[in-house]
Length: 481
Image (cartoon, rainbow, N blue to C red; front, top):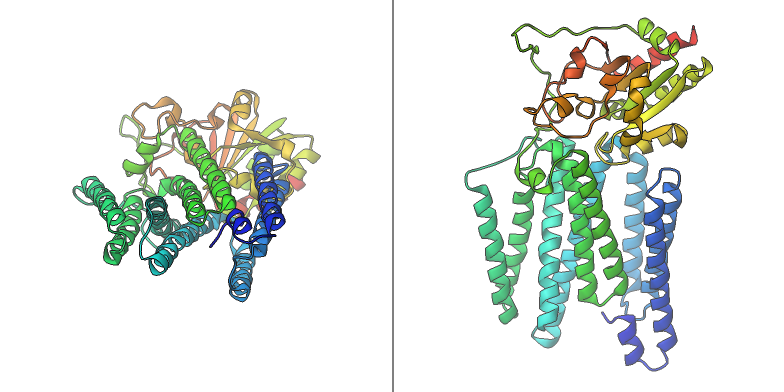
């Protein structure tokens, strides 16, 4: 496929068309950048998403206008099928399953880039009988990054969805085997660049790239899958950029670079929020991703730890007669789809002149911004949402902290216990509040698979049950105050 610049040179009189296409690409890229900027705040995120979507529409239209497109009917069929699938997914997929959907989309993006590389290789081989060095290098990059992204993303999806066990899957000499496969891929690539007519070698490289994606993700625990999804999102952008170089398409290069950079930044944010390095996430096999009920906890003296229970009526009185309440939403709230009940509880507390704020941990839920989106669905005002750094200084003056389905992100062991595997992870310091109410189904562990000291503190009251059911009961009791 010719680029618009090549087309303008090849066909006299098409200079205006080529210039127009490049200007459209420039406008689309500008909208992508503005969209990413707007996505940085919950208040402007929808506008940012719309700007980026408009930019993509402009880029698609400009590409379709390019006279090098051979078959508009096939392209139109693909657009219709893809649009239908996307619309259904947007309507049907629950917010709690959003990381899984992102994982699938990453995989499909990687697959598209790898297929572009494969298709371009066979086209050049059929037309010229050979492949130039620069085309060969970009093709190899497209195959490697696209193949790893495809299979790695589908493994991540399977772990998040529960199709596969969230436990790390390891075997002896796993990392040396991975290194040998990577070295074999690089060695095979050098041979193929010298002998590009070797189809067997090329297909072997494709197979190794797919295998590397599987082996890259299976040893990572389910607790770290959201970080892996974010990293693979970056890979999908790099794969798109590689496809852009293969096709000589500036728009693909720019958009892929933006996705790659933003994915890396998001990965870094998530690692920082867990106080872990990316190498620790990828190679430590941390967390099972399973939240099986834990055994009865015991203290240092061997005696069972005491849990203080509370019923909805007493909890409602604590909340209703407080001056300030901080609500901490977690993945349990997301699973129960309790955000609307939480908003109703907020309205009832504000009726009693209680100041209500929401504390949002960077990795609450399964992805950054997950809680913000859920609360936005329930029309919770943005000015009530506080980041971890802003709200932690206020817990000392908070009468009641209401924790709804959160676990690891409020575990004091991350701050106080150097022997804890999550030591150093920034947490929401709800244990500093005068009273803490925790809504939880039972005493099961979080994704990290460790016990939470918060649940046994004298100031903590456990309200056991489904988040949505318990919050609804609190609403009913607060209404009577």
